[in-house]
Image (cartoon, rainbow, N blue to C red; front, top):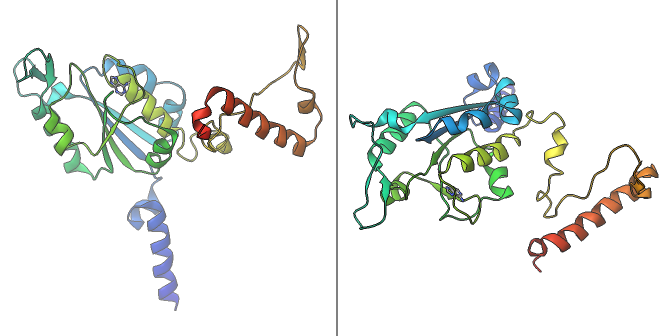
Length: 255
Ligand code: ADE
């Protein structure tokens, strides 16, 4: 009986941790994100400030930025080539990307290889929620006129766009996706509930917020917020969230 209890306990902890028991008891669960890019400099600033830096400082996330050129065997460290189809511009080659991904995969298992590109479905809060539960992610940033389709067909497991506009490369998109994911890891935000009350988490935009002074240049904070009645304030917030969503994003209400 004691033995059975022990087995159940070990199973419980390992399934939470998604790791072997030894790892769980000796180390914190860390999310690892490997970003593959041809312009690593573009990613230095976002990952060394704010939430992402805090997550790294707290030991909750590890973010590695790799230059795809390091896997190029070309003497000029070239990572692109002319497209077979005329006039299509330069295309990212499969070889250095495959070498980079294979090397990373030989060191650990990855949950997803994400490719950021404008010709994909849009990244939404639900994606961030699901990806924040993963342990190891690779994010591949596109550049030039595109990427050899075989990378997308054989190496990438998830393609995401951050919106219907074209950026110079996937780097800024990678910073956005990583930020949205990492801030959801338990312990990253100081007030843990604040991620739950974000816009989109309950299908509504957030209600307006106010701080002191209660009156500024004659512009008053809604009286109800000064009433001290939590129930009334909660009802007001819900109403405001609904009204704001209906006005700004009726599509979220299916309208
Ligand atoms: N690369 C260029 N534009 C992009 C976009 N809108 N989303 C993701 N990656 C991109």
